[in-house]
Image 1: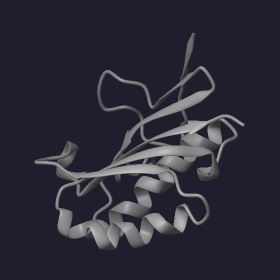
Image 2 (image 1 turned 90 degrees about the horizontal axis):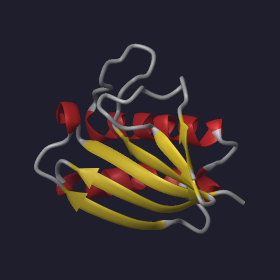
Image 3 (image 1 turned 120 degrees about the vertical axis):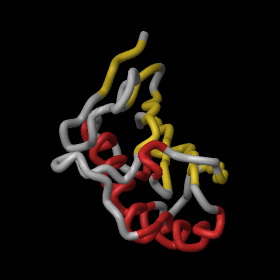
Image 4 (image 1 turned 60 degrees about the horizontal axis):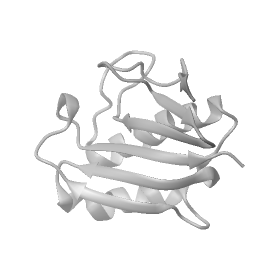
Length: 126
């Protein structure tokens, strides 16, 4: 059994997918890009400006289910340019201070709306 999870504090899906799916004690959160949910516009400012907005969007979805970044067990980070790894990692580490989740980080050819970063995650209900 699965349940669609949606938060109005995060950008609505820009395609045929759900913001998140709750299934078997896990929350699978779709990749979030630096889209401001109020204006619908991309947040610019390079990796340093975009990564915090991505985490704001992820947090909104987690909080909809009463979860936090402490519940996250796996993330996948997609970077437009691997040269942004150190800057992204510095911001990323602010959200995972203790027992960070497993992670994959890859460079991709292009991301939606030509953003610099997209992050998806899996959280566990405790």
